Amino acid sequence: MILFKHSKDLRFRLDKIKQKKLSVGFVPTMGALHPGHISLIKKSKEQADITLCSIYVNPAQFNSPEDFRKYPVNIEADILMLEESGCDILFIPGGEEIYPDENSKKKHFDIGYLETILEGKFRPGHFQGVCMVVEKLLNIIEPTHLFLGQKDYQQSLIIKKLVGMMSKNIKITICPTLREPNGLAMSSRNLRLSNPEKGIAAELHKSLVQMNHKLYAEGIQILKNQATSELERLGFKIDYLEIATISDLEIIEKYKNRQGLIILIAAFLNNVRLIDNLILSA
Ligand code: AMP
Image 1 (tube, rainbow, N blue to C red):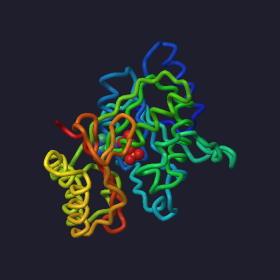
Image 2: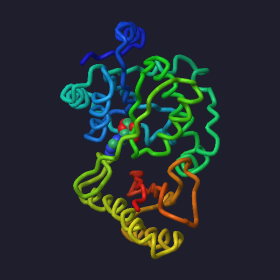
Image 3: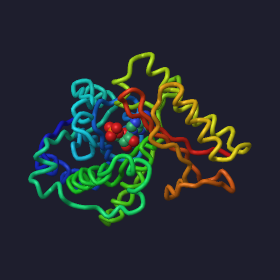
């Protein structure tokens, strides 16, 4: 694996790769890597000739300086995991590469409805920050393939929209969420949970599975109320729990059939904010 810190050096290498007509699969991350991230690397290795991972903890997408400060950083372990996974290129840009001046932080992206709901509603400006860094990275790397996690489903749809707005021809794959044996979605933020808290955090996934089972028998509102009060009893503070269409995240209150729907949740356990989702099965 070759590590680049400067986009100029990376571009030089990528130009050579492009001259050979090789495809480039890109996996953007914020580091503190876990097997969920590595599953994206593996998907890229299946589909593309060269796999490139980036690690950049993007300050523009954090809502509070404290959350940014506490975001786990584990670069040596990340490099080892990536080496073992067979990743070809690692890009670790410094802040000056992504935001060379104040103007580069000011661009506004016309995301529309998708930015006004769920994560967008509870984390104002978050998706503008995501688009800012992803646009920069896509312009530097110009990948042929892009691999994103279903864990951040709303973000995946927004990045799809961004790629469309940039008129880039990139094949996007949304990969399934990898979970701990108890069902907890793997996340870098789990490093901030104690072992007992990890056990409680797994209840988020369990409540989504239960909602999926009961959805035929009960109305959406009743199910949401039941799940909310049970999770609050366990100590969660819920930001949202919604059922929406998979295609464009239109939030629904009544359903005709279960096809094409997803349940999404965001909740704090102590000071750690966790998100998860489940595509409804028939
Ligand atoms: P992050 O480092 O949290 O920004 O995540 C980088 C990429 O990994 C995003 O596309 C995430 O959706 C994806 N990802 C995060 N957690 C998981 C997981 N448990 N399983 C699969 N993909 C994940």
